[in-house]
Image (cartoon, rainbow, N blue to C red):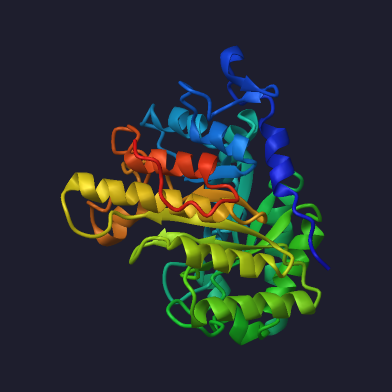
Amino acid sequence: MHYEPIVRRIGILLLASTVASSSACKQDGELDCRADGVDCTLAEAAVQAGVLVGTAYNEFRDDPEYIPALINDFNSVTHEGAMKWAATQPERGVFDFERADRMMELAESNGMSVRGHTLVWEQASLDATPDYVLDITDPEELRALMADHIRTVVGRYRGRIDAWDVVNEPLETAGSEIYENHFYQVLGPGYIAEAFALAREADPNATLFLNEVLVSSAGARFDALFELTKDLLEQGVPVHGVGFQGHFLTKPPIYDELRANLERIAALGVVVELTEVDIILHGTGDEATRLERQRQDYFDMASACLAVEACERMTLWGFTDRYTWIDSFFGAGFAPLPLDDDYARKPAYFGLRDGLLNGSGSNKTTAPTR
C-alpha cells in the first residue's frame, strides 16, 4: 500500500501564520520570492516551493545570534543529540527530556515542524547507545527495553513531532550489508520491523523513516537500501519514508544521480527527505572559486529534491560554520554550511535558495550567478 505523503501539507499549515509578507510582492496572497527586489529567507522560499527546509539544532545559550538566525531561515528543526537514546534514557529506567522539551517549546512557539532523531541506532562508532543496552544478551529483556524506550519517547511527543528516524544507519558504515549491530545479534534482523511497529503504535500519525548515509550515489550501497526498504514494505512494515543523509564529505551531490536515487526509492510508495546535509568546500583554487563551487553544489542538491514530487524536506546538519560537527572530527576549514562564522550569507545560501525557487520540476543544473 502506498503511503499518502502528509509532510508538505503539515508544513504549509504550520507556517501559514508565520511567513513574512509584503503587500507589494504578494502572489495569490502569499509572498512571491521570485518578484523583483524581494529578498526572501530560506524558509520563505521553501514555502513557495511547497517543501520544508530544516536544520539540526543545538543550544548555544551564550550566543545571542544563534536562535534568531535559526528562526529566520528555517521552518523545520531536528535536535542534533537530545532525542538519541543516551540523551533521553541515560540510565536504565531514568528518562531525561529537559533539552528535548526546550527544543519543542522553541519549535512550537515559532510554528516550526519537528523531526525526531533517532530511536534505534547502534554502530561500531559514532552512535549513542548506552552500555547498559549493549550489556543485554537476553532477547526478551532487550525486546522489552526497546519497546519501553520507543513507547515512552515517541509517546511523550505524540501529535507534536511529524517525523521520526526510527532506525538510523541499518547498513554497515562502509559496506552494503545489513550491519549486524547489537540489536541484530540479540533480536535478529526483525528488530527493524519491531521498532517500526512500536513507533507506529506510539504515534499513528507520525511519518516513520529509515535514515541512511552515503546513499546519494548509485552503487551497491544504495541498492542494498532499496532492497531493504522494498522487503520491509512487502512485509507490511510501516516504513513511510527514507532519509538520505547528505553528509557530502568526499564529493559534492551529483544532480542526476541524487535525483535518480530519490525517484527510485519514492517509486516504492514512500516519501523521501535529505536529512543531514552539509557540503564541504571541495576541490582546488582560491577561496572565491571554492565558494562558487559550493554554491553550485547546494543548488544541485536542492534542485534534485525539488525535481522529485515525494521529496518534501531538506534538513541541514547545522546552518552556520561557527558550529559544525565536522570541525570536531576533521578540523577547521571545511566551511560546510550556508552561513559563515559571523552569520553572513555565503554563496551557498543563495545556491540553496535559488534551488528552492528555480529547481522544481526542471532539468536545470546551473544556478544563476549572484
